[in-house]
Amino acid sequence: MKTSRLLAGLSAVIAVGTLAGCATTGSSDGSGSTGGGTTDQTLTTIIGNDIDSLDPQAQGTTSVMQIVDMMVEELTAIDETGTAQPELAESWETSEDGKTWTFKLKTGVKFSDGAEFDAEAAKFSLDRLLSKDTYKAAPNELAVIDSVEATDASTLTITTKTPFPALAQALSLPIAGFVSPDSVTAEGNTAEQIKVPVGTGPYVYDSYTAGDHITMTRNDAYWGEEPAYKTQTYRFVTDASARLAALQSGDAQVIASPPASSLSQLENAADQDLLLFDSSYSVQIGFNTQNTKNPKLNDPKVRQALSLAIDRDTIIEKVLFGTGTKLTGPLPKSVAGNADVTMPGYDPDQAKQLLAEAGASDLKLTMVASDGRFLNDYKVAQAVAGYLRDVGVEVTLENPTDFTTYLSGVMVDPKEATSDLRLIGWGSIYLDASQALLQFRSDQVPPNGFNGTYFSDKAYDELVLAGNGEIDEAKRTADYAEAQKYLVEQAPTMWMYQVKNAVATSSGVSGVEGKPNNMFVTTWATPAS
Image (cartoon, rainbow, N blue to C red; front, side, top):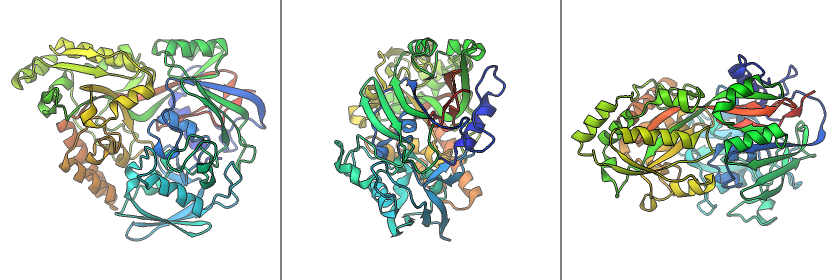
């Protein structure tokens, strides 16, 4: 069982405890499960996007990560404060210089194909993550790892290039999840690309149909507590109203992001429950800052002007029906290392003036946005386009596509970019600034990472990397604060709001957990008694 289950569940309860009719999670025995025993039933969950990759080492979408994490586990897990807790590692210690980490591993754990989980198997997956030969591997902040060694069967030693105090937290990322080394030659997998993950988790891959669903079955040989449901199916439905209809008809028991206009109804429904919780993510409208078609967007003053044109308060109130939180800096408050920085307000007159001063009153921009990935995301984009038109910008908002197609169109090499503005969701899965600020680092410009704004600035990179490697917590925080202040001045994106997630469930299901890292977990759900 995952150590963080109860703690994550408690944070969700706190977040929704004032809402009428909301489900609680967790139990007095500390297991994170509300029921006893197992069932032959199937739990059907609907999310708004398809799967872009099932390879643990290529994860970049939280709604997919939460699925992969049902089959694959990591060394650590995080609690609701972002503190690392043991998962497949029982304990760890760090050298005085902060560069050598020694992990003692759980023994007696097996992959779902029967192979032993040990230090050599752990090394295999971490080496895959760091290998340039692995299909779309995204080591991100874990690129700081210099070497991984199996000291003995139950001891793993990781050496980093520079000190990285957040390593234990970062190793909770699904990209650091472990697959059986034997599985890379089975079931269509290769060492370069995993399509059927074989991990140590409580569920096992059963089938996947692109654009429709993935099904997993209970791992009856799981080393920890058995999950209740024999089968869990995740379906992919872009339209929020269709997701709600499926819940109301009984075709699904859990849905992500119901229509924002339905939240009040769900709060008071007798046969549905609503889970509403803050996340560590923000929704942004990112600029193409290496723009050859619209080079004026490469000027921070123009980007600042456009940001002043957006009425975020009204978007939160009218488009999101209150399901968003105004940001007081680039990072949500739930992310360690966040700093209060003066953010752009709403001043369309000043926006027009600054655009005129910059010789950019005649801008013609192309904008793209996802539909179904975040609550009312495409409607948010429509509202932003409208505000920009109000200050004289000609905006073409492209039709929405499925999320996998959308992602493949915006996370491309700058030379292949076709849009000027793109809706982006970003935050920290392990609730630390080292990951949240990774978004704008130069070494993360696609195809190397997920810097969809293409922002590339040496001064910014140096500030973030200084914070990442600083052992002194006060100095680390100060470096991150300077980086955030500089980032707002450069304005590579228009920060819109902190994401507040909504998950609706049938009243016949309990134990669905909302987590502060933009995920929700159905793994330990049970039929309500």
